Length: 254
Image (cartoon, rainbow, N blue to C red; front, side, top):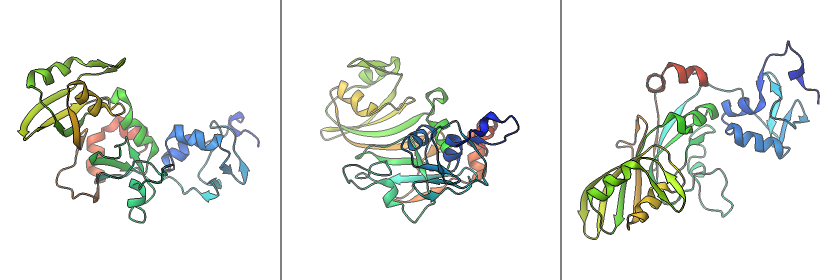
């Protein structure tokens, strides 16, 4: 297939970015789809993520035509425990996207919540928006309510503000407040900016606590609020633009 990027007069955008804006996958995941040989443009299999496309081309992923990118949208979803945040789970466990099938357009998640974590999960039809809000450089604060078995003190929690090294992994500053003791469990409000894999559980274990319930209550300025478990609600476009700011809106085409 000829490479149109070699023609100076060609106008378009890279296929990986197009697929991300269309909500098919993030740019990185789109590149993997291309490597698998399941992305075609005008009937020909694509071999490079640098290939440039325009919306009038017949672009397909695994035989399904990709619709033209829509303006970025975002939804708040109250994820119950027992769902994995993936489109297809190799172990056959129920997924967030199966639970929402037929209720929303094709969406991807902004970050992830593991199987037993509840609470706020942001969903979007825009791969570009997902990527921007996940970037560590943007430092979006994730806030959690943690119920953990064991005993700790506010002084020990305050020590997390300087960050902590656990098994060779550096975790950035963590703000934590001891809310109440409930039997053998403690409730803690905790805020992080990095969101590394299983960060909250690992840090609590480092303090001698075992997390038995974990609820994300906020991601940046977006709140779980009183959204019922298993329900979702779209973030109004005006609110989305106000919270993201002009620069970020320009980057994602909002």
